[in-house]
Amino acid sequence: MSRLDKVKCLAFSDRIIKLNDYLLSQAANKKPAYKLVKGKRVYEKSIPVYLQSVSALCNQLLRAGTSIGANNAEACNAVR
Image (cartoon, rainbow, N blue to C red; front, side, top):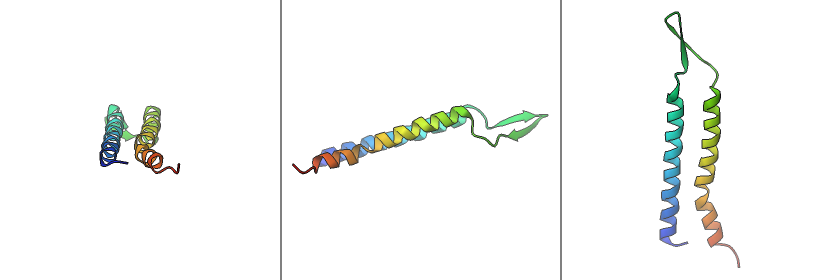
Protein backbone atom coordinates (compact mmCIF):
# COMPACT_ATOMS: atom_id res chain seq x y z
CA MET A 1 0.00 0.00 0.00
CA SER A 2 1.45 3.32 -0.99
CA ARG A 3 1.82 6.26 1.35
CA LEU A 4 -0.93 8.12 -0.51
CA ASP A 5 -3.37 5.24 0.00
CA LYS A 6 -2.69 5.24 3.74
CA VAL A 7 -3.27 8.99 3.95
CA LYS A 8 -6.52 8.72 1.99
CA CYS A 9 -7.77 5.87 4.21
CA LEU A 10 -6.96 7.81 7.37
CA ALA A 11 -8.59 10.97 6.02
CA PHE A 12 -11.74 9.08 5.04
CA SER A 13 -11.95 7.36 8.43
CA ASP A 14 -11.44 10.68 10.20
CA ARG A 15 -14.30 12.26 8.22
CA ILE A 16 -16.58 9.31 9.03
CA ILE A 17 -15.82 9.67 12.75
CA LYS A 18 -16.57 13.40 12.63
CA LEU A 19 -19.81 12.75 10.72
CA ASN A 20 -20.81 10.14 13.30
CA ASP A 21 -20.19 12.57 16.16
CA TYR A 22 -22.13 15.31 14.38
CA LEU A 23 -25.13 13.08 13.65
CA LEU A 24 -25.31 11.81 17.22
CA SER A 25 -25.05 15.33 18.66
CA GLN A 26 -27.77 16.61 16.31
CA ALA A 27 -30.08 13.74 17.22
CA ALA A 28 -29.47 14.24 20.94
CA ASN A 29 -30.17 17.98 20.70
CA LYS A 30 -33.32 17.56 18.65
CA LYS A 31 -35.66 17.02 21.57
CA PRO A 32 -35.11 17.78 25.21
CA ALA A 33 -34.62 14.81 27.54
CA TYR A 34 -37.12 16.23 29.98
CA LYS A 35 -40.76 17.26 30.25
CA LEU A 36 -42.19 20.20 32.13
CA VAL A 37 -44.63 19.03 34.79
CA LYS A 38 -46.17 21.79 36.90
CA GLY A 39 -43.32 24.10 35.97
CA LYS A 40 -40.59 21.63 37.01
CA ARG A 41 -38.30 19.59 34.81
CA VAL A 42 -38.89 15.85 34.95
CA TYR A 43 -36.09 13.97 33.22
CA GLU A 44 -36.86 10.88 31.21
CA LYS A 45 -34.79 7.86 32.19
CA SER A 46 -35.28 5.88 28.98
CA ILE A 47 -33.62 6.71 25.69
CA PRO A 48 -36.12 7.90 23.06
CA VAL A 49 -36.82 5.55 20.15
CA TYR A 50 -35.60 8.00 17.50
CA LEU A 51 -32.26 8.30 19.29
CA GLN A 52 -31.93 4.52 19.46
CA SER A 53 -32.47 4.20 15.71
CA VAL A 54 -30.04 7.03 14.91
CA SER A 55 -27.52 5.44 17.25
CA ALA A 56 -27.87 2.07 15.50
CA LEU A 57 -27.37 3.65 12.07
CA CYS A 58 -24.39 5.68 13.27
CA ASN A 59 -22.84 2.57 14.79
CA GLN A 60 -23.11 0.75 11.45
CA LEU A 61 -21.73 3.78 9.58
CA LEU A 62 -18.79 3.99 11.98
CA ARG A 63 -17.92 0.30 11.64
CA ALA A 64 -18.21 0.32 7.84
CA GLY A 65 -16.39 3.62 7.36
CA THR A 66 -13.44 2.85 9.59
CA SER A 67 -12.83 -0.67 8.26
CA ILE A 68 -11.55 0.68 4.95
CA GLY A 69 -7.97 0.81 6.21
CA ALA A 70 -8.00 -2.80 7.37
CA ASN A 71 -9.63 -3.97 4.14
CA ASN A 72 -7.11 -2.07 2.03
CA ALA A 73 -4.13 -3.40 3.99
CA GLU A 74 -5.43 -6.95 3.76
CA ALA A 75 -5.93 -6.64 0.01
CA CYS A 76 -2.47 -5.19 -0.56
CA ASN A 77 -0.74 -7.82 1.58
CA ALA A 78 -2.62 -10.81 0.20
CA VAL A 79 -0.56 -13.86 -0.75
CA ARG A 80 -0.65 -14.51 -4.46
